[in-house]
Length: 633
Image (tube, rainbow, N blue to C red; front, side, top):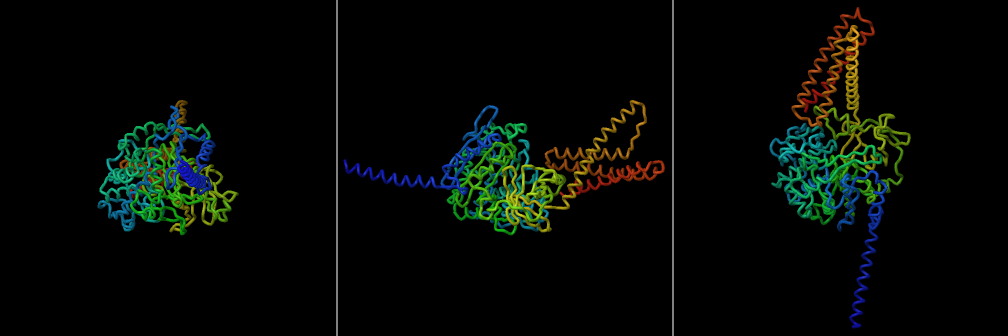
């Protein structure tokens, strides 16, 4: 008995010894920011408490190559009914869905079915791409991954269409939603939903499977992701379909007067591979952990995983990676890879450090959310200014890069190309601190955003918690370019002139509408008082043309910028008729003024000549922004 007890005590001692070392090892594990693993939950709780005013619901999972470290659920999935977010809640992935595309592509590369440097037209049906401006330039899968195939933005796949407008299959959607190739291949980084969906179609073609079936068989099933849907109508998973009807979407900020309730807020995505996935936090975290693991079950060979995480595009002429086979890089204390996503109701994010395998998934039921999706990861990965090369923090810029910058992720060609001057404009104005405001002179367009200089040609744009690394360079035309992660923005004197011209026309349109209303009232009052009511028919015609043009433009924009062919054609024809009427009327006004100049006061003559010039300007506007661009597209 004593011998048995002695043996038992020895075994216990050994277990305590090794167990003690295991616990000590676990307690010593730290994140790149220096945060102990054991303190991750506490730090997240404190962060959430600090920003509780802006919280709707936020679910977070932290993982490393060994598994899930922690999962946390904050806030409400349904505020009105007091329903807390939990493990059963589902959220839209948004553009995080694209990660599935790039994993699928790399699986097909591994199986020898796709060559990343082969022209994708070899994998597509004959004559599939019909809007290529540079047909002689090869477009490869690598170009689609790096988003530099030259495709301009398109509104088809970025909006929430009606449920009935979802296409029957991916090929049909791609043919209907094809967007124009506005740039040379490799010229600019311009994030493209169309290019990503095109890559998914290549997977369909080489695998012989519908893309949805392919993802289920090769990603969802191996990872036991039973609570995730990829079908655009959520017909492939009854659990997700039911739970998505229970999720409500909101906006909540520090000031409650801006709060908004969006309801269920479905985002039906026509090019569904680019953004239709919906699922639980657990499933998303399992996928993230598998992607971050060196022994990933997603690939048969470790070398495929290593290749996928290797850089494929860089900032300027540096060795700073921008993209890794479809995964974007984000600069914290360490460089992490991943993808964020946004729909009309949700924002999600997946990031991980390829070196340590530490990663995070964030899911919220708030569109355009940046604080939780991008600031919480900094608890794990630190700040970019924590790096040794940026130890001095932000520095004063020794040169001035102020100017109006235009995003290349935009509609550059076509009948709604003027829309680029309404959004994705970055007016930078250097302030006395040596950093930059997003402002036109003293008018600050985005008070919560600033651009800071980090080092030579390196900048950081802070937009309400979302910090974007930027690199200063020049494009092939000698224009100043700031490269961002997913798009380039450039200064352009031509675009600046067009923007000023466009807004001048819009202002004239507004003035014309006001003038017409006033003239109508004056005319009615004079008639009632039985006084003569004289109106210059030619000037009245010009004002009617400008007012009508503004109405046409606003109507076109109000149609969700879908570029519906028949509507674009009608708009262009109507605009052309207005332009020709304006031209004829302008000549008539000049002729009438010259003919009657003896009986007219000098002031009246000047007034008529000014309006005649405005009449000719309108024709230039029509030819520049509608007729030429329509026929170009």
